[in-house]
Picture 1 (tube, rainbow, N blue to C red):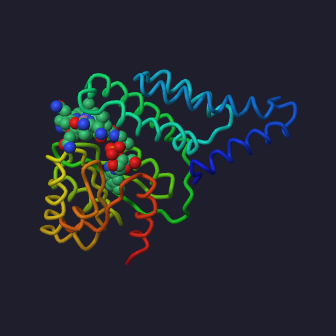
Picture 2: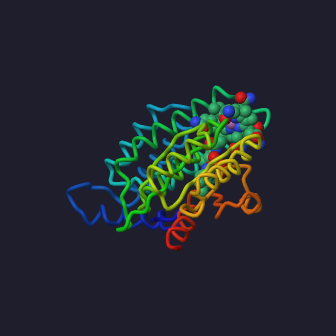
Length: 247
Ligand code: B12
């Protein structure tokens, strides 16, 4: 997968590639660079404005000019999602604006989903969900998308998932990893309840538990007996792969 730095290289490479591909695109290096960065900026500002149609329109132009879904995710969708953290802080946390921005992100993620490549041959299953009492799902959806195109078969249980629903999902799908997300200090304790429920149903040893979300920390993961913690979608790929490789 491309990092932001390698994406810059991709952009530059993409630009020179267009010049070589004479006649087809007739773009100069500067044109390609500016059209790509225009697309990224358009996506970011549409997300921050809560303009779902604008996000889809800009993603379409990006895809049409040859950008990959991963590139759009890395260079536009993820930074924009992180920017809402800065924009909607403390007294600026206007719920209607945040809901609109979230819908715009969701629309973009849905649009990109069919375009993400699967890059691992052997697929491990992972069940993911946001714990009971919590409806935040932007981070969880981004993690699911990243892990999906890293080769995991993702089963998304959605939001506000009760411990017994996670137990049922683990029984049904027999995943290698169970991913839990929580964004509220009042709901992060639910992660421990999910682990207790797995234990009660003799499932704890059959699945690795990976947790994440705003207030969650590595220490908290240790405290509740989770197997691992990841602070971002990018870190989740590395950690999920390591967990999947464990016996
Ligand atoms: C968007 C948002 C909302 C939206 C959610 C829409 C949606 N579909 O998700 C809405 C408006 C609905 C909302 C509602 C509420 N919210 Co809110 N919300 C936010 C906001 C602005 C952004 C969260 C977000 O999406 N971040 C972007 C993503 C990309 O980041 P992320 O979630 O952290 O995910 C990354 C990592 O954490 C990690 N990760 C996440 N999940 C997982 C899972 C796994 C397995 C792994 C490995 C990694 C991982 O990877 C992700 C990608 O890199 C935050 C502000 C903030 N600073 O976080 C407040 C915030 C989380 N909300 C807050 C509050 C208080 C609420 C409400 C209680 C408000 C109210 N009075 O009603 C309600 C709660 C409703 C409920 N029961 O859940 C507080 C929480 C305070 C606290 N510490 O408990 C925050 C921090 C705002 C604040 N500054 O006060 N919210």
